[in-house]
Length: 175
Image 1 (cartoon, helix red, strand yellow):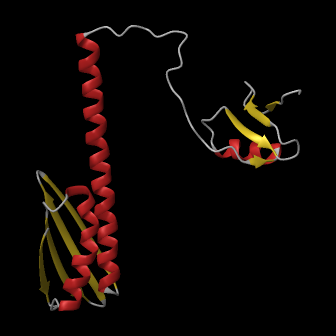
Image 2 (tube, rainbow, N blue to C red):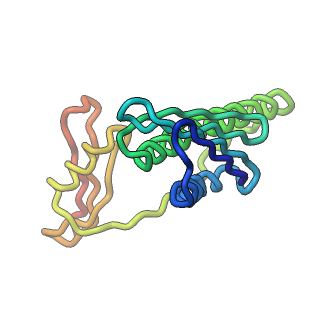
Image 3 (cartoon, helix red, strand yellow):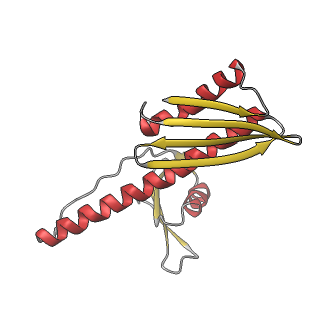
Protein backbone atom coordinates (compact mmCIF):
# COMPACT_ATOMS: atom_id res chain seq x y z
CA UNK A 1 0.00 0.00 0.00
CA UNK A 2 1.42 3.34 -1.08
CA UNK A 3 -0.08 6.41 0.58
CA UNK A 4 0.47 9.94 -0.70
CA UNK A 5 -0.87 12.70 1.54
CA UNK A 6 -0.94 16.31 0.44
CA UNK A 7 -2.51 19.35 2.01
CA UNK A 8 -3.97 22.50 0.50
CA UNK A 9 -4.11 25.30 3.06
CA UNK A 10 -3.52 22.61 5.67
CA UNK A 11 -0.33 20.81 6.70
CA UNK A 12 -0.35 17.01 6.93
CA UNK A 13 1.08 16.27 10.38
CA UNK A 14 2.61 12.97 11.47
CA UNK A 15 -0.53 12.27 13.53
CA UNK A 16 -2.75 12.67 10.46
CA UNK A 17 -0.42 10.49 8.38
CA UNK A 18 -0.40 7.76 11.03
CA UNK A 19 -4.16 7.88 11.42
CA UNK A 20 -4.73 7.70 7.64
CA UNK A 21 -2.33 4.75 7.27
CA UNK A 22 -4.13 2.89 10.06
CA UNK A 23 -7.57 3.51 8.53
CA UNK A 24 -6.57 2.59 4.97
CA UNK A 25 -5.19 -0.75 6.20
CA UNK A 26 -8.87 -1.82 6.25
CA UNK A 27 -8.73 -1.88 2.45
CA UNK A 28 -5.91 -4.46 2.42
CA UNK A 29 -8.46 -7.26 2.86
CA UNK A 30 -9.77 -6.43 -0.64
CA UNK A 31 -6.52 -5.78 -2.53
CA UNK A 32 -3.70 -7.17 -0.41
CA UNK A 33 -0.70 -4.82 -0.46
CA UNK A 34 -1.10 -3.85 -4.13
CA UNK A 35 -2.94 -0.51 -4.21
CA UNK A 36 -2.23 3.23 -4.09
CA UNK A 37 -4.00 5.83 -1.95
CA UNK A 38 -3.90 9.56 -2.68
CA UNK A 39 -5.28 11.66 0.19
CA UNK A 40 -5.73 15.41 -0.21
CA UNK A 41 -6.76 17.40 2.83
CA UNK A 42 -7.95 21.00 2.84
CA UNK A 43 -10.06 23.46 4.73
CA UNK A 44 -13.01 25.42 3.43
CA UNK A 45 -14.49 27.89 5.90
CA UNK A 46 -15.00 25.80 9.05
CA UNK A 47 -15.08 22.42 7.29
CA UNK A 48 -12.18 19.96 7.01
CA UNK A 49 -12.33 18.21 3.63
CA UNK A 50 -10.68 14.85 2.93
CA UNK A 51 -10.51 13.78 -0.72
CA UNK A 52 -9.37 10.20 -1.32
CA UNK A 53 -8.56 8.33 -4.50
CA UNK A 54 -7.70 4.62 -4.41
CA UNK A 55 -6.17 2.90 -7.42
CA UNK A 56 -6.01 -0.88 -7.47
CA UNK A 57 -5.26 -2.83 -10.63
CA UNK A 58 -7.65 -1.43 -13.24
CA UNK A 59 -10.14 0.08 -10.78
CA UNK A 60 -10.25 3.56 -9.27
CA UNK A 61 -12.41 4.50 -6.30
CA UNK A 62 -13.02 8.04 -5.07
CA UNK A 63 -14.61 9.67 -2.03
CA UNK A 64 -14.86 13.27 -0.85
CA UNK A 65 -16.33 14.23 2.51
CA UNK A 66 -16.29 17.25 4.75
CA UNK A 67 -16.69 17.51 8.50
CA UNK A 68 -15.60 19.85 11.26
CA UNK A 69 -13.15 17.16 12.38
CA UNK A 70 -10.61 15.94 9.81
CA UNK A 71 -10.39 12.50 11.44
CA UNK A 72 -14.17 12.02 11.11
CA UNK A 73 -13.93 13.05 7.46
CA UNK A 74 -11.25 10.40 6.84
CA UNK A 75 -13.41 7.80 8.62
CA UNK A 76 -16.37 8.63 6.37
CA UNK A 77 -14.17 8.36 3.28
CA UNK A 78 -12.93 4.90 4.26
CA UNK A 79 -16.51 3.73 4.86
CA UNK A 80 -17.62 5.09 1.47
CA UNK A 81 -14.67 3.49 -0.31
CA UNK A 82 -15.29 0.15 1.38
CA UNK A 83 -18.90 0.22 0.21
CA UNK A 84 -17.86 1.04 -3.37
CA UNK A 85 -15.26 -1.74 -3.37
CA UNK A 86 -17.71 -4.32 -1.99
CA UNK A 87 -20.35 -3.32 -4.55
CA UNK A 88 -17.88 -3.61 -7.45
CA UNK A 89 -16.51 -6.92 -6.15
CA UNK A 90 -20.04 -8.34 -5.82
CA UNK A 91 -20.93 -7.29 -9.36
CA UNK A 92 -17.76 -8.86 -10.75
CA UNK A 93 -18.28 -12.08 -8.79
CA UNK A 94 -21.89 -12.31 -9.96
CA UNK A 95 -20.89 -11.71 -13.59
CA UNK A 96 -18.14 -14.34 -13.39
CA UNK A 97 -20.49 -16.83 -11.79
CA UNK A 98 -23.20 -16.28 -14.42
CA UNK A 99 -20.66 -16.56 -17.24
CA UNK A 100 -19.28 -19.83 -15.92
CA UNK A 101 -22.77 -21.29 -15.49
CA UNK A 102 -23.76 -20.21 -19.01
CA UNK A 103 -20.63 -21.79 -20.48
CA UNK A 104 -21.25 -24.97 -18.52
CA UNK A 105 -24.83 -25.33 -19.77
CA UNK A 106 -23.88 -24.71 -23.41
CA UNK A 107 -21.22 -27.41 -23.53
CA UNK A 108 -23.01 -30.30 -21.89
CA UNK A 109 -26.33 -31.49 -20.57
CA UNK A 110 -26.74 -31.99 -16.84
CA UNK A 111 -28.63 -35.12 -15.86
CA UNK A 112 -31.56 -34.57 -13.50
CA UNK A 113 -31.12 -35.96 -10.02
CA UNK A 114 -34.15 -37.55 -8.45
CA UNK A 115 -34.83 -39.19 -5.11
CA UNK A 116 -31.46 -38.29 -3.59
CA UNK A 117 -30.40 -35.97 -0.79
CA UNK A 118 -28.40 -33.27 -2.57
CA UNK A 119 -28.05 -30.72 0.24
CA UNK A 120 -27.57 -30.96 4.01
CA UNK A 121 -27.94 -27.98 6.35
CA UNK A 122 -26.65 -28.09 9.93
CA UNK A 123 -27.89 -25.77 12.68
CA UNK A 124 -28.37 -25.65 16.44
CA UNK A 125 -31.75 -26.57 17.85
CA UNK A 126 -32.47 -24.62 21.03
CA UNK A 127 -35.36 -25.10 23.44
CA UNK A 128 -37.96 -22.36 22.82
CA UNK A 129 -41.71 -22.00 22.97
CA UNK A 130 -43.87 -22.33 19.84
CA UNK A 131 -44.70 -18.62 20.10
CA UNK A 132 -40.99 -17.71 20.04
CA UNK A 133 -40.50 -20.05 17.08
CA UNK A 134 -43.31 -18.22 15.27
CA UNK A 135 -41.57 -14.88 15.92
CA UNK A 136 -38.26 -16.27 14.59
CA UNK A 137 -40.01 -17.55 11.48
CA UNK A 138 -41.61 -14.15 10.92
CA UNK A 139 -38.14 -12.54 11.04
CA UNK A 140 -37.11 -14.63 8.01
CA UNK A 141 -39.76 -14.14 5.30
CA UNK A 142 -38.04 -16.51 2.84
CA UNK A 143 -38.05 -19.47 5.27
CA UNK A 144 -41.09 -21.76 5.21
CA UNK A 145 -40.43 -23.70 8.44
CA UNK A 146 -38.35 -23.83 11.60
CA UNK A 147 -37.31 -26.86 13.63
CA UNK A 148 -36.96 -26.41 17.39
CA UNK A 149 -37.12 -28.19 20.73
CA UNK A 150 -40.36 -27.29 22.47
CA UNK A 151 -39.35 -26.02 25.92
CA UNK A 152 -42.72 -27.07 27.35
CA UNK A 153 -42.62 -30.73 26.18
CA UNK A 154 -38.85 -31.20 25.48
CA UNK A 155 -39.71 -32.75 22.09
CA UNK A 156 -38.55 -31.75 18.62
CA UNK A 157 -41.28 -29.74 16.81
CA UNK A 158 -41.60 -28.17 13.39
CA UNK A 159 -43.46 -24.90 12.89
CA UNK A 160 -44.36 -24.13 9.27
CA UNK A 161 -46.13 -21.42 7.28
CA UNK A 162 -49.41 -22.43 5.72
CA UNK A 163 -49.97 -21.75 2.00
CA UNK A 164 -52.04 -18.64 2.81
CA UNK A 165 -48.87 -17.08 4.39
CA UNK A 166 -51.02 -15.83 7.28
CA UNK A 167 -51.34 -18.88 9.50
CA UNK A 168 -48.94 -21.47 10.89
CA UNK A 169 -48.95 -25.21 11.44
CA UNK A 170 -47.17 -27.15 14.19
CA UNK A 171 -45.86 -30.70 13.79
CA UNK A 172 -45.45 -32.44 17.12
CA UNK A 173 -44.57 -36.12 17.75
CA UNK A 174 -47.13 -38.25 19.59
CA UNK A 175 -44.81 -40.47 21.60
